[in-house]
Structures are given as C-alpha cells and as structure tokens.
Length: 333
Image (cartoon, rainbow, N blue to C red; front, side, top):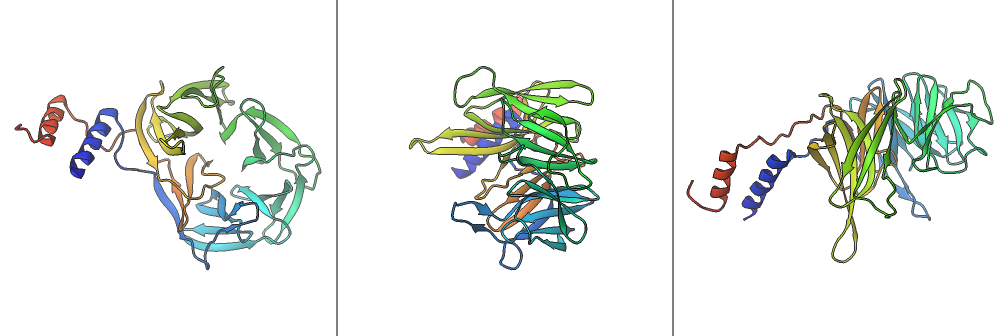
C-alpha cells in the first residue's frame, strides 16, 4: 500500500510539473552544532541566540554566532578566522570583499578594521524600530524598516568617520534583493487578515521597469520572497503557506517555486521544517541566492542559483499514465 501511495504521489508530480525530490542547490557550508563549534542560548525573554545571520564574499562565509557574540569565517567548510566582539552585542552583520560591518542592539553601526570594531554611525534617534535585511554593496549600506504598506528599504552612504546621523541617499518600497532589484507583495484592497492570492511586484530602478508576478495558494499566503532568476532565466520565489488543522492549530509549510512569467509553477521544492529560524534565511550576494538552514544539530548554507525550472520527474504520456494506473490497481495492461 505504501508503495502505491508513493507511486501515486509521483504521478501527481509528473502531472503538475513538481519535483518529488527536494533540490535546494549546492551545500557550501555544513557545521555540526557542538559545544566546541557552535551553540544556542535562550534568554529570559525567550529570544534565541545562535548562528543566525551571515553573508558571503570572496568564497568565504561569514557567520554571526550571536550566542557567543563572535563572527566566524569559513572557507571550503573549514574555520579560517574567529572575530570576537567584546564592546557591544551584534545583531546583524554585512560586508563586501573589502570591509565587515555590524549593527548592535542599540542600532549603532560598527566597521571592522582588521583588528577591532570601531563605531562609525548611530541609527538613533532617526530610527527606533527593529531593522532587518542589513546589506553592504558598492560603498552603500541598506536596511529594511517595517513601515507603510510594504515597508521601506533605506540606502545610506557608508561614513568614513563617525557621524550621529546617517546620510540617507535613497529609499525604495519593499525589500532589496540586490543592486538592481527590489520587491514587495501587493494583496490589493482585501480586508481579510490572510489572503490566498496576491501579486509580487519586482522593481528594477536601473531601467525603471516593474514586473508583476501572480502568487496564489490553496491555503493562505504568509511570507513571500523574490529570489531572483534561475540559471535558465525563470523567476524563483520562496512561499510560506499557512493553514489550520482540525484542532485549530496553525500549521505552515515552506517551499521554493520556479515560475513562468505568468505565475504558473514549473517546479517546486519543499523546504524541510526547521526547529529554529534564521533572521536572514535567504539572501543575495554577488548575484547569487543563498539559504541559511539553522537546524538544531547542523548549520548549513546552500547556494540556490543552480536550481533549474524543470522537474526531475519524467514526463508521462497519456498512454504511459493509463498503463501505470492499470498496474497500480492490479489490472492487466
């Protein structure tokens, strides 16, 4: 019976164009969580501290180990550098091929000069909310604030010397993926708390072009992220779907979808359920998309850019499908 169910699932995958097997790109970092490598801790307010923020530059993965307030640098799965932080508590890190930056829990910005972190700017009193999606690129910094209908990404010039006010040079609706891509979800004028459909707005300021991608779910849409394009040029998105079981318990599932330009799903990859969630699960560095999986016993970083739009399940003709259905029901072919 189990074999029949598995085969039936594969038939459904073949008909809908979905892959039976998860394929979340190439693993570029894998670290077991042990007392001697990485760990987690939970404070009195139930906040989780651990390996939760990261960026990739020059084939090096920089991982913020907030449980021990330090930054770990890995190349080829090997720890190459440990940067301890003693004067502040880091909550976000970002950088490029030249410089490493960190933001503390009081919203101060620090730059690493190779030996120590020096404070170069204060984000207060202009900003007093929790920021996210902190990034550095080409001499500018970016961070996201949850304000307005879609939130706002602020661009600021990286200061050479300390300043109590950042020079904000531009703002964008929604989240920043990379230098030329910003995005947000538009749910229209619905008054419902959750929606089953919406439009992903992808904006390219370099040429002032806007792409509108329909997104829908049989359940309710939670978080939706634009992840850029696959190597064969198709839009790739992360979707969190929310539903309730018969006891009214909230259930979620996460997947990566590869779409065509009209929003139809070409293939989908289920993301394994995590016990702990990263603050920056998906991020784009140097034109590639990465995923941080902070499971309870293993930390992994995956390169997602090699995901293709085609299903691994072979296409079935009508004749093949008819024969397979007859075999499943024990009937002569």
